[in-house]
Amino acid sequence: MDAESFKIFYSEYPKHVEKQNAAKLWAKLPDELLPVIMEALRLQKKHNWRDTNKKYICNPARWLRRERWEDEIEYGEDVIIEEDFYHTDAEIDEVLNA
Image 1 (tube, rainbow, N blue to C red):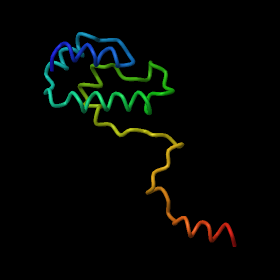
Image 2: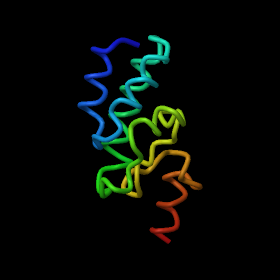
Image 3: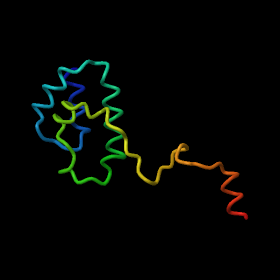
């Protein structure tokens, strides 16, 4: 990937250390990964790192080296996914109204 896209990535990344190492790794990545990486970064900033002290966020070079854009997004307890329900709404209503 090119230097211009790295500038955008690095400016968006919440921890600004090891810039040269990150730039070298960035240059080796295929261009097709740009939208994937930027979307993962956006989601991780919003969900995984929202209340995280920066010292616990890995350096951008390590994030790239370990392909951390593939990490699962931690939406938190306040987000309920439909698969989390074991009973239908009707079954729950039946129990509540009994």
